[in-house]
Image (cartoon, rainbow, N blue to C red; front, side, top):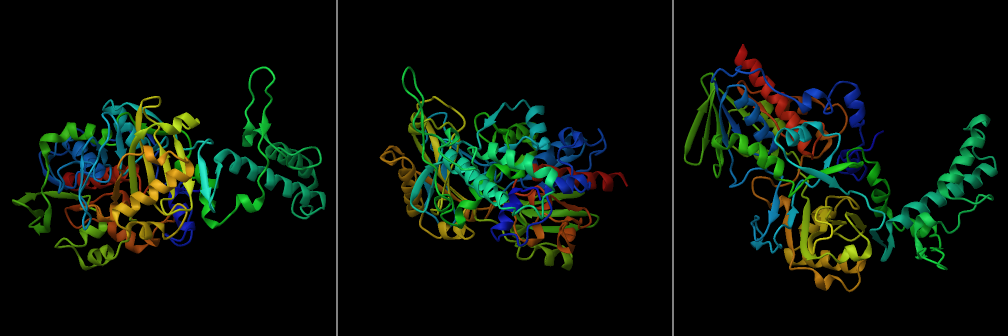
Length: 515
């Protein structure tokens, strides 16, 4: 099975049994996000014939829908509850306010040019739809450094460099395999013609000596780095398997870069993740009404009537991109089957903590990448942008169930001040004496962010396998009302899924308008 982010969460218990890979779904034709159609999608010009469409939500799905519908000649109105676009693509800059339900108000304190991607943080190179919009609207991209062998792993109260953890694990696995082969343990399961080549390979892969023993390995790092003149390198002493596996929480970091949608090369927009949403917004800005929460979704004759702050909007069609668990609360004229399908959709309550700070990590040779820990903050993320500048924003926590199934719930149950303190303590463990350099810190708890209340749909009905009757019902139009959002894709928790679902939804509108 190809490991994706959803499959990883499945193995931690969020989504039930791990399902088939995204690659398998693509090969079966269920989804093809890497197709030319995804990157260059458009409806037939003039096919809208002035028919009215109201789009609910100005996140990625809503903005993509509005742009493509308007381009095809539909008369489009977008209603967005927030005073900003982008939805869960939220970049915090300068002194931006951070308002959350049942949390004290916060304000960022970031130096000019610095920012925190509170939501979406990276884009896989396979996500051709969202990258296609970036290219179409001239949004500059740069590499996002998702993996860095120089970062630290803090597990069981011990901190080691990622390079030592990864390459010593290779060495120990190879050593055990070589020893087992020497005793004939693989003879029954591996043809004799393959055994010699395999044993030679694992020795090379794991850095074994000619006796099949693992010893100090330069790939794992040095206690004395090689230098000029008479300065030979002194490799670190290998870690034991007990040190390499101090607990279950460490499993994910070992396979993180193998996850299908975490593989290099990852990308990010220059200047903040919201630059793509902002670029699409510029194309449809006159059509978008901000600060207009929807209060009811009604059928009116053959069309729709959307009730909202300040009145109502009547249209021939509606594209609803609101998260499923929030849509469930809005009075509507949906069928009993739709209402049942919307009940109880779980959303991941992820959290991030950010600090503006001088780039002390670069003094330690760390340029981008992630540190890992079994503390509740789970992840420390080093900025890939602005390398060499005086200051940057260090993400001191990205809590999403990476290293512990219940970490998101436990972390967000704590007061904001304690979340920041946990993150600061994790930075101190990774960089002794440096946490004093961190700025005040801000925390975003997505479960308390109004109009989001989570970062993405999870649960058995939104897993990797071909989904069942509930999912099919969520996809089904309600007369002139169609639905879109990351939860209505097999690329959930990503901007790509939002864009691809929007493509499918507006194709339905086009078909109905052309009937």
